[in-house]
Length: 317
Image (cartoon, rainbow, N blue to C red; front, side, top):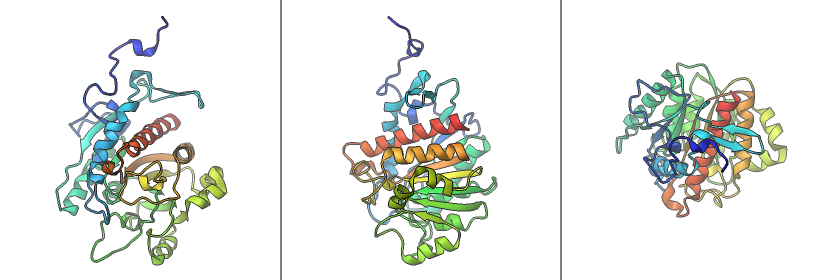
């Protein structure tokens, strides 16, 4: 019988053991994060305006990610002829969740920001599992003492509302809040579409502040290469991925689904291109609400995308 890399160590099947992201090691001591990538859960959904449930996103994504727990053999992609996420080139840890204070947005966001800063202090790339899209606000705030970042948002909605009835830190506000930060030097918003995104004044204000906005149809019309050309290169990117950027046919488990969305490889290839033309220094994936998808395909999509994205970030850096 032929030998392979799985012959050493535990087989460690997906349904065996403790459920961390990708079954990577759990680090409880945030003063000792020794990794290239640190995964953080942000189970906060008090900013939702419609269907809640994204607080269960981190658990759903972690559970789904065990299917892709490649172990020490890594993940071979025969199209690229590359082994991603092999244990001799990959240091990924799961540091658990930020502490969430029920009904208190300010304290909960502060706890998320604190956790992301601990990851950055360890020189690791933060990968944050939402949670609704408001968790992006403390994530971006955590970069305030870092070098400037360009935000690439992949989303069905513009999320550029300034204030509604006193609400400034909900899931419709994150890109507006980010645009106010000195360390955010630009923004590319991709996938924005249909009714229910943002009022016209939001688009006007976003463009006035230098944002470039593209719908799914515009993305497909110009193609991947031209889309990448329109995004500044050789800079630091922060990615924020709302699962509702994807079509509901493959991502039904979200609070605000929007038809006419992306499919898996469109986004993976976009992010792969970004990782080659710049430096992805952090990302969040938000708005997975597992209870609206009994097939668990939304959580599986999120987990598969994240693991493939992490693999490409580490390989292309």
